[in-house]
Amino acid sequence: MLNKKYIVSGLIAFLAGEALIVVAIILPKAEIGSLADWVSGIGAIGAIVGVIYQVHEQRTEFQQSKNADIAIALGIVKILKEDKSKSMMFPSDVAQTYCYNIGYSAGSFRFLGFATKETVKNLKDNKPETEEKRIKDPERENHYVTEVRKFYRIDSRETSNYINYDLGLLKQNFNDGDKIYAVYDDPLGKLYFSIDFIIIRKD
Image (tube, rainbow, N blue to C red; front, side):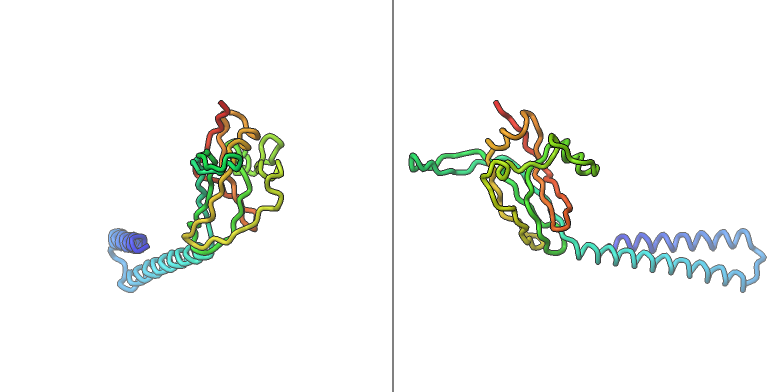
């Protein structure tokens, strides 16, 4: 922020100096009073530019301080699952996702499901979803999860709960080779997409 202010101040001083040189060359016979008017005008313009810049920076900081924003992680990890029939634990691959609030204030976010790369592009381009290109939550569609997913408050610089998702369900609902992204939203309906993706492998 300070560097920007120094740069703008230096630019204003440079322009003011250049203007004075031009005035001195073009108007060598100008009266002192006229030259003073020029200098006064240039100084006023510089002051106005400085004030506009300062107001813009303060407004940007104010807007940022009010906003919450998230970065979403997605990957395949191994966890231990219980085999009740054998009373033992065994390692299993799951799709794991969570989000991190990178904004300046707390916000509420909700996991919606997964989407292919083509679906993400459609949503970012504000194109309508189709049956083939839509956000899918196989756990809900297959009635493994019956309740509506809820919004959870995440404070600034805090991480949400981890969501472990059955890879088998994703393989049933997406095609081999699909690049799958995790999708979240906020109470205003704004969508957020994971930075990373996983590739569906059915072999």
